[in-house]
Structure formats: C-alpha cells, structure tokens
Length: 126
Image 1 (cartoon, rainbow, N blue to C red):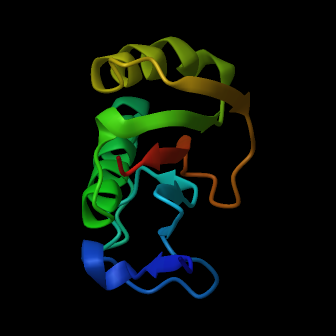
Image 2 (image 1 turned 180 degrees about the horizontal axis):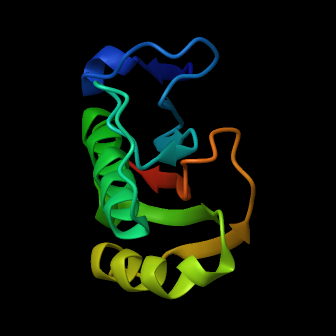
C-alpha cells in the first residue's frame, strides 16, 4: 500500500510551501511538527496554555481527517521553547493523552520566536 499525504485543505489549513500536515502508511499516521497556531488565519496565541491546547486540537483534527484519533497515538515528540513551560505543558498534555503514549520532550528554539510548543505524533489506524 503506497503512502498517502493528507492535504492542508482537509483540515481547513493554508497550504504550506515545504510540508504536509501528515502522511499515512501501513496503517499508521505520521504528523509533521504541529504548533499552537490557527492554520486558517495564521494567528498564534501568546500563552503556553493556549498554544498547547491549540496544538493538541490541531493534532486531533489532523488525526481525525486521517481516519484515527488521539487515543490511538502511541508516540509523541514534544518540543517546548523554555524549560519553565514543562509543568504547564505536562498538565494539559496529560488531560488529552490519558493512554500515556511513549514520549520525548526537548527544549528547542523555533524559527518563529512566538512559537512555544510543537507536537509530532505517530498513531495507529487500527
């Protein structure tokens, strides 16, 4: 079965010049790094709380458009812009990923300094 790319239009997003939101292959969904940004308007909230909730909502939308859901996520790669955000991020993250998938968390600098959080996930479609 060939890999299939999810198009930004499937989640009401504006086309990105160099990446797609996700690919599906062999019963799995692999997302790009998804940030707490409104992909239709480009708006980025200021707070870590709002960005975390929006990033998770964006991931959920992508997974649903790909035929799966948050509860099927088994691996999360998390990036935050400052170590002080970890407790807030963990609290919000834990309320959405109750199955406790495998996870990595890295403090990273983003190309857009307004970005505070980014999530990349792998989910099964089973």
